[in-house]
Length: 230
Length: 111
Image: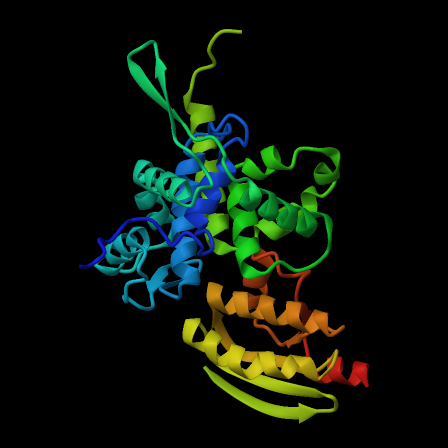
């Protein structure tokens, strides 16, 4: 008998960037999403997807374009679908183009990441009836070890002077771009390290493009929305 | 990418020519990482004929610098073209990587 293919990653493999970003975007106690700028999570998850493909040696990037290095499947259905999309594009496109494409698939990325985190027994799924009609899903934390570990590592990196390894450079970059870093590390010790954080956040090109996309959108919204009330 | 090793004092100089892209990064990683454990100032990269670096190229440079610091030294990056200097600056690596304009004078200053 063959084992059916499941969309979940191996329970003991390291978390993908998509999973890691979503996990850090959820509040430890309430299981709800932390506040983020408009499209913040959409672009951060899209950036995480590209970062996963880059570290799997499937794509490479420069300021002009994103190129496919290898079309061989990674075994991760989420990555392989994205890789297929990129590989079949008629011409190479920029990182920001692909961020736009995958940001529009936020609900797919978010749902897949939540399912995997539940399968890994890091999160639990809880249905709550709201007004007896709408089911509201919450994802309370079952095992907080992963979050604690990554926060401890990133904290040491921010407060120290070591160079980051590529994974941590990408994480800091994506978390800074989506304004999550300031929510996770919100005290005077980190505020005093804003220059260090800005330097670390620039070390990954995909993260820089994610920041540019989110900031541009915020600027457009500021100028386009009439000031209401007050 | 072409990598040509030579010896200058205590340092191995790797002269890089062409593109430090994904394939180049793999080559450089294989040539560079084993040499970093030789001492605190074991390798210098002559980048004057290097014309392009992708994200995976910068990741290898960052990883190599991190490794060299573990042995108490710095990697020396010499002769980056203005375009690549700019690119590394944008990547926040101007403080992380030890960039020198000219290999000869940097090596002379060390000895």
